Image 1 (tube, rainbow, N blue to C red):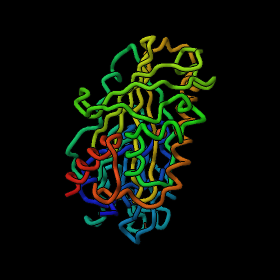
Image 2: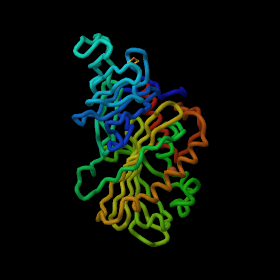
Image 3: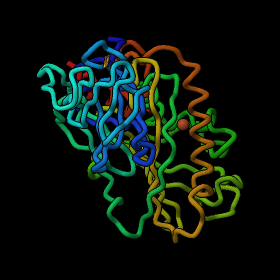
Image 4: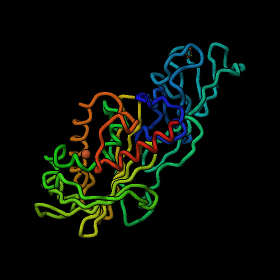
Amino acid sequence: MTAFATHPALRHYWHAVARASAVTPEPLAVRLLGEDLVVWRGDDGQVGALPDRCAHRESPLSPGKVIAGCIECPYHGWRYDTAGACVLVPSSGEGAPVPPKARLRPAHVTERYGLVWLCLDDPVAGVPEIAQDTDRAFRRINMAVDTWHAAATRMVDNFLDITHFPYVHAASFGAAAQPEVPHFELGDLGDWYGYRYSVTAANPAAGSAASGQTTATVQRHMSSGFALPFAVRSTIEYETGLHHILLLLSTPRDDESTYFTFVVWRNDDFSVPAEEVTRLDKMIEAEDKRMLERVRGTLPLDNTALVSVQADKASVEWRRQLRALLV
Ligand code: FES
Ligand SMILES: [Fe+2]
């Protein structure tokens, strides 16, 4: 199995496609699981997400305009509301009946953690839970949604992998990491499934705001967990009691390109600007992106197709569960 993004099972899960703040009455074109959609915010604040293909002559809707909360097709001006119903066919005249088939099937939409999430068919699971989101000791920081020219499967594999730290992240926090990974066990991490480990991390100037420390290295007690299909949660606890939690979200646009964003929760005193406490995370993101955009194609999900070692077992288990979901 190589192609995965158009697999029907993935249509039943929530995928983050945009920052909530980026979804406005201006139409936004997004691509999800090989389908093009138009997303916009209606007059009542509700987000509409429709196939980016008019029912009349299949023009894309995203180059159109939003008028009175409805998306207007740029070709002949048909208008659709956020529920997908065509509410106006200008050539028939105002108030004339609209052909009943002039309707587009909307995607399910929800907003959570400052992001707009879409689900193309009926959801079978919720948005991944981050308990700290409702904990007032924590603040939430949203990052931009970027497009990576890499397969989402390669990205999740990478985010569950700690053995690339001394190599890919040598210029950020990885210089002090030991290449040899101690034995670890996979298990229940509360809502998430994964493993815990500790790393000695370099603490460059760009990272001192994140760690809250100025020593050359810092000890990070970490966990990496996953929620199917493509969410990874990485938690970092410094010895000062500071928690830095990352939700790493990979949304397949198609097999080879992926939206990536991450959300940070921190129990600091909120005084250091968000930009500073995420500077190291952004460096790390750029390092992973540069590495993964060199790796072509999708990740073979069949465990016998690749050589894996004991340190890869989190990814091996995630792939096993993803395979089961796709069967
Ligand atoms: S193609 Fe959209 S109104 Fe004609
Ligand atoms: Fe990485």
